[in-house]
Image 1 (cartoon, helix red, strand yellow):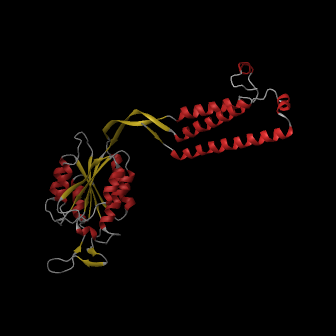
Image 2 (tube, rainbow, N blue to C red):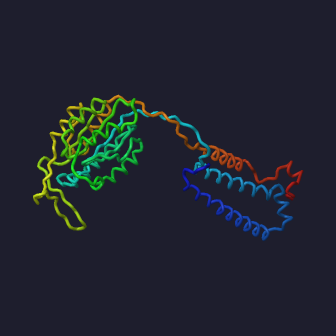
Image 3 (tube, one colour):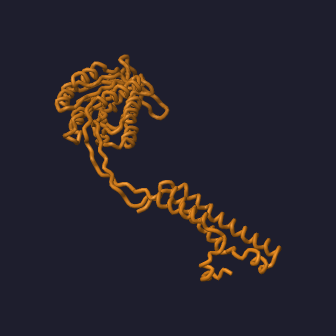
Amino acid sequence: MIQYEQTLYFYLLLLIPVLALGYTLFTLWKKRVQQSLASAAMLAHIAPERSFFKGWAKQVLLWLGLAFICFGLVNPQIGTELETVKREGVDLVFAIDVSKSMLAEDIAPNRLEKAKRLASELINQLVSDRVGIIAYASSAIPHLPITTDYAAARMFLTSLDTNMISSQGTAISAATRLAETYFDDENQTNRVVCIISDGEDHGKDALMAAKQAAAEGITFFTVVVGTEKGSVIPIKQGNAVSYKKDAAGEVVITKSDFEQMKSIAEETDGLFLEGNNTEAVVTAIIDRLKEMDKQEFEAKQFVKFKDQFQWFLGIGLFLIVLDLFLFYRKTQWLKKLNLFHDA
């Protein structure tokens, strides 16, 4: 199998037929001028050692040299080679609240979009850590398994929305219990769950579930999005906007629960942060991750294509240098053989 790294350089090959056409036209013009000035016998007498074949041979060498250099610039990659890659890092699982209260706009543009941006910026700063995503409301679902594919993680983040889980409400304990089963490497000593939520919890055992997970070696980072003052929950249907109401018909005001999120972080020796300032949150979490011991969790052999550009460049330069040392005069021993009938 073969692949080309820089296919744009193939366009340089178009120069070769242009040069060939130019040289052909120049040769014909030169021959007509010479014939107008002197006869063939006189020209042979004036320049007896000049070879017609050598002129074309030099051009062919030049064109071949340019062709090989173009292929070298394209960098054909042929065959494979094995490369061992070792990774050290932390397993980091994002548990992101997708309940309807995350639509509140007391933090721009709304709580859910802010949560997604925080997670995305964190992923951008990771180097060799593994990440996973859990979405939760009244229940929790696995959204992305543990992976080192950060591009996939960012893509899955963008697909989070409040319609993913039909039953509404918020149960942080459901996300916590799912997170306990999410980590696939028993030897990983540093396992972190980053809960990004407004803190509202309709369950009763979130703190207990977090303590049980902490006993299994899981550390919790909690990031609160929203304000304690709270906001209404907009429900958008086309261009119409209404607001969520309770059973009594009153407009619901959703308030972020800072104390709940702070308690989870403190009880698990974790980290509690307010999500208003994205840069501050990302810096604090990355600094904490750097302090943790890195566990080697992957040592795989990756197959990649082997670069072959050096052969093409070498042959191309050799042909061009050979062209420089090839003179227009006839070669004496070839002249004796008269292989090309070069009179």
